Image (cartoon, rainbow, N blue to C red):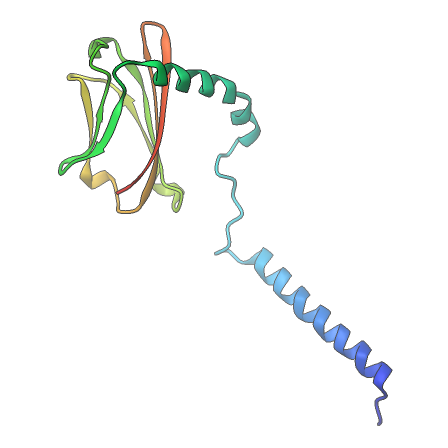
Length: 148
């Protein structure tokens, strides 16, 4: 059977289309390629974005800023010295972009002006830290990325 050049072109197009479709189907059904959103309720979180901007502005206006630093014992979070640590409430969220199972939240309950997150809870790599706290009915927000 002899194949002319028109039939050859059609067969080449069909082979190419089959090749592309094979990879599209394979990538969509592959378990290793997760297509998850960063947050579960993305649109609901987006509605609260103006509040986050206001809280971050409040934290920026403080004369004594919140400080996050790595120490030998772990991650040290020092709250502003001009705020009474007994009246500070809030939450510390640590988000690991590479692994959702490592994310955790800590409520803020201070016995001193600082909070220490133990070294054993933090694996090496990038962490996104989000600290929200309230003091005298004023809300504050501090966001920072740190490589541990």
